[in-house]
Image (cartoon, rainbow, N blue to C red):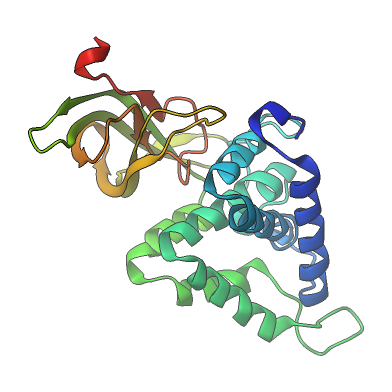
Length: 280
């Protein structure tokens, strides 16, 4: 996390993670089984991410998550077991917290918190040789998440935790024109792709009809990476390239698809400069 130029405060982020370990460690004892890393490292990092957003704002969290995607010390792994059964560090330290955060943004933080509260109520204090309660497992967590999230998001929950699924979104081009009302009409050409990977690494393309965020930002000011957000909304995307048009108040500068990388964890082509008449 040595990235002071991007505003990353490693001591704050790591302290939040370690404090979260102490909190969760006093509440849950994961069973020594497949997926246990999801109940330790993933929950600790997810908790830290929520603290970062609450204390420092969404842009600080976006930059932190960008740092978390660096291939060191754990390079991205596209093979292996789904999160509910995963044992590798990349799943526990990266995919897991990202999955919790994506679900909390789609279903609402309260839905995820409610599932975690019920998990604690059922397993709090369980430990080998101690309480008669059973040790916590990822399957128990998943049952609580299934109860908490609305039916419309069950497929997303399944993709995030029961399978190894990857989304790929790309902002191909974006342009804007002024309207007589003083607003701006922004047009995006975006592509979408969704693949599922089995334990051997074989990729299979699957249908996609996901509701995905599109955003438009004003010009960035001094010290900013992204400017003031002019628009954020979810649009249902299909596989392939499609055109989406939105209207914003204020002159746009940059915009794109899945701007906070809730689903597409490989950033780089999600946000592009918006061409305006005076920029040609």
